[in-house]
Image 1: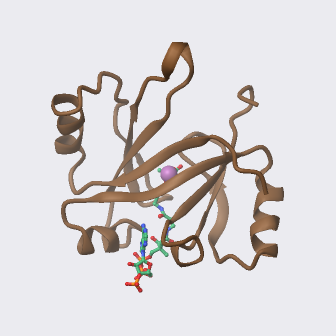
Image 2 (image 1 turned 30 degrees about the horizontal axis):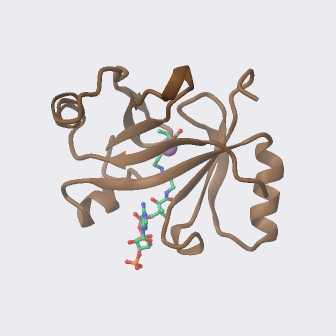
Length: 145
Ligand SMILES: CC[C@@H](C(=O)O)C(=O)SCCNC(=O)CCNC(=O)[C@H](O)C(C)(C)COP(=O)(O)OP(=O)(O)OC[C@H]1O[C@@H](n2cnc3c(N)ncnc32)[C@H](O)[C@@H]1OP(=O)(O)O
Ligand SMILES: [Co+2]
């Protein structure tokens, strides 16, 4: 297993509009995407794009609000009503190979591989098998290899 680029940090928030205002007004974020629903993931999401140095690509914060009571972020927000860091997402060149490798290591993979917010396949690994950190693995978008 080879660690790839940090694609995004997922942040659970109770309310997207307030969170967007916070990142704009307190942190000076100037590039925030329009929120959109991902019903198959149970979340409403938008991205805060952070700039890189010298024209390099920065990374993203992924702001996540629940779409329903059975959303995967509902339980997290019940325990953390202000919201907080929910997951980290690393890129890999081949999602099938990565999944097989984590399975070989005995890590608990949460559900099937599915298409994520960036349009490429993703899966999640249980935080209790990843030193307390819910970990998303995503295939690098074509053209970014
Ligand atoms: C926007 C789309 C997509 C993308 O393309 O980027 C996304 O990122 S979608 C993001 C939301 N989707 C997911 O998170 C899917 C995977 N998550 C899950 O399957 C569940 O959320 C979970 C991780 C299994 C947690 O389930 P839940 O029912 O909320 O909690 P449990 O009670 O089962 O928790 C067990 C244990 O784990 C601790 N925990 C829970 N969530 C986290 C977390 N985010 N980070 C760290 N630890 C977490 C929880 O506190 C429990 O610990 P104990 O209390 O010690 O038992
Ligand atoms: Co994510």
